[in-house]
Image 1: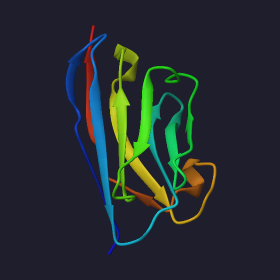
Image 2: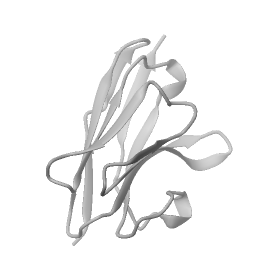
Image 3: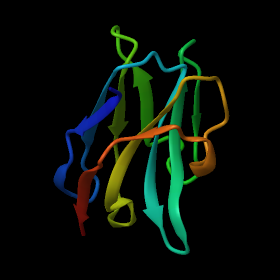
Image 4: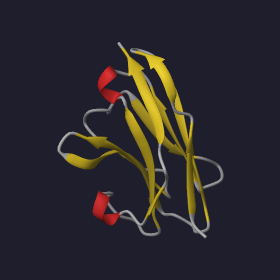
Length: 120
């Protein structure tokens, strides 16, 4: 039984920080990442992290967010700094068993999401 469980969301003022966590179980995942809803899209890619710890980011979060895998490789974190009101969204953990550039169509497993709200 595969399960992805996010935690760490909450309410923060603009300029503040939050750290999201994703705990995955049931399979080994070579690619993990974060998505959030966006205008005109079901979900947009935010950041991804591979089993070799390499990372990739959307331009909108580059320099502010840091994604990492935990010592237990099926854990993943998203450190979000200098948050902006436009970062407000439900953040979804995503995972695949293969190495791939993440897109909605390539995600094999989804978490249920954690709400991040940034007040101005």
